[in-house]
Length: 453
Image (cartoon, rainbow, N blue to C red; front, side):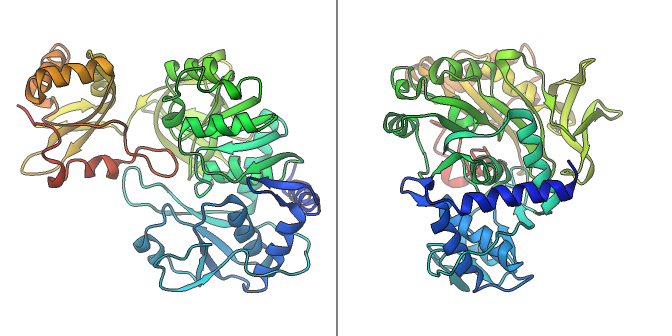
């Protein structure tokens, strides 16, 4: 399908959705026709080529804001977070949100204006990377790139059918496409407006619904599902589970299948590249590239992707091994090699080794700058680990971990500073960011866990 045909098809589908009197959103309900009247009203307040920041937790209000920008020929800008300094740093006419907070500029409420519905328009937008390894950067997305993503999703998975639930934010590309834009244009889908923060809340929504249900989630949520009996209201109702924002472990995928009754569809990609490939671990660990995405290796066995959405040829941070049919396996991160005292260390290898130590459930490592570079380790312990820590105390527990690593690593590269947390800090995309981990090692946290040598 060429770009002109794709644009016409998706516009027709959106127009049909915005003309319907039945609920397009649930919790509380909002029809397509009601949404269209708010879109038309807000669009009268906007002008072509203006840039408007949108930070909004309600997917219905967020949809009004984005569609009104497109209808007016303006550009929606989606920041990576809603912190006042983040919003203030973006050059724009103002903010569209139901809560303006401390924003100093012009604020427009998405539901404050009504007008007769107009034929819907589609357009571009600007997103920001999550800043997981540095400062967030602006990434423009053209209409062609957005629709190419939608075409690839329907080619891979078919049309959506059911009520869309989500544990991730629509402010980022994954949530924007899967939680919002795709179901917004899918005749058989509705979008639940509730922001799901914990599994029991998801189970409660499942108990209220008749089904079918769809879930857009992340490994951070799927790795921590409670016992099957807690999530029993979802069984038989969930028809598809999507996961992105990181790699789901084999154990997490198997647990999700047991607890939710669905093997998660994992999506590999980034803000810059869009969706690159997908897999369901019930069927194996290999990744299958999306239609229109060409995947290859560079001279260092690094994964390189090319396509309309990527905007050309883009090197990713992953190493890969390809099968004869074009599917591939990830083989670690090539950008996670650091030097400590002139010794090379794979952070991936250190994290895996820590997870093999008794009592350690998850581990993240990062390089800390100071008078000399040191390795920091952030740990999530299992029940046995928490009991050992309470019994031994911080320093002996620390030393026992270091002793267990000496069979694989030289002493100079072992973690010097440690933090134990109940769960890794997550951003609104369900990702563990480098900055959030780094903040755990601020002076204010120094009493949290003893350092060792």
